[in-house]
Image (cartoon, rainbow, N blue to C red):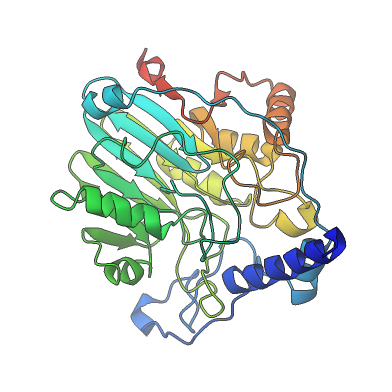
Length: 357
């Protein structure tokens, strides 16, 4: 079979996968009149605050997928961390970038995991779909005990069934608290995963010494053909008496970030996506580029930000190593030090003591 024929069938397979993952309709799951809010729609779906829709037409999907070319391969260094230190650490505040939007935050003996994805593919099937470009910075087995998991939305690169199942098996006697956007709890209940709380935008939940706030971002949700926007998408504010952290797993740019900054009066640290933004005609409503990431850093009043959502899965068309370069340019244009909006290597653990000096 010629290379052209193989390429043709691969593109057909990719189109079918994208249709199954992303191009969904919606069922009529009605909300009661008492629960209707501006971002709640009567048919039981959700919408963004500052844009009517992130949807693209079928012809636009085909145009993008059919004309895609694989970016050049680039080698990134992989940091070595110390799993024994992470497992035993109870005193030093740390941040570990496991990859994509998966972070491990350790603060005063409390361990937080964001959008946990530590397996090989971001896909509904094991044999096709986006494959990891970089391996996870730490294995599931080497994770410390996790106290809290926050999940931003249900796309396959952010909500990974196998990762959650393995964490649940590992911590069956002491399961983590898991907070998810509205209408995502049932999916986890069906997996027999306990200790799940679902939240709407601007809801607050207290857990131990932390206040957890769900905040609006601009995105969408869906895992199949028939569940488009039936579960909410969100950012998370994790507030401790000594530390305030903003996690934005995936988002386009919107005025939501001015709203968040006004409500919380700044953050010690924010995790802001910088990748998966090309082509702009297609991705702009749902994925920020580095220039917009810097604007979010400013809008939210974050003292420091860490770049996430790049270099782990090849989801879009920009060169794999472009987001850090454009971030550096955008920071320079705004006169912001790259120490205040920093990059990490996959697997890198960084002390957060600098936040408190």
